[in-house]
Image (cartoon, rainbow, N blue to C red; front, side):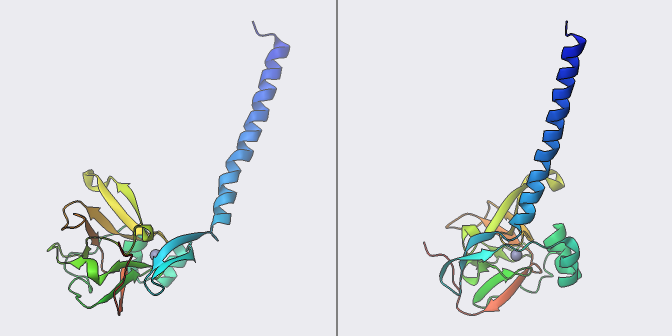
Length: 189
Ligand SMILES: [Zn+2]
């Protein structure tokens, strides 16, 4: 049997642990606000190599003010533009496709191909570090979501029915990209 005195001690300990728990729970929030100044290492076409860049962390409201409604819908709300409507779908000029949200180099004209799907398609990104992926279980199937590594802006999905040499198809929204004409570049090898 637990004596009344012992019981109070246990309760007291529990309360102290609960208080400590609240303290601990506050820590991640503090750490993430400090992380807003954190950096990432990504490939830059202009520099021809890896550079360190600040991450871009904005609130939904800030993005709403910066982006067009279509850009906001795709980049920040994981939307998808209608097939064959994108400005860059048929673009065959040499250059770099950068994130419409933050300007990070994401895809190269050298890796673009016509997949017949109605969205700009690439068989690889500029460099693996420039994009992030996440499992997406919406639409009752498992897809792999693709986003910008710098600002987290949604770009599209990657599928395993692409052409050689990777066999991958990065199916990307035109509206989440901005095209910069010029010498195409990307991580070599
Ligand atoms: Zn971005």
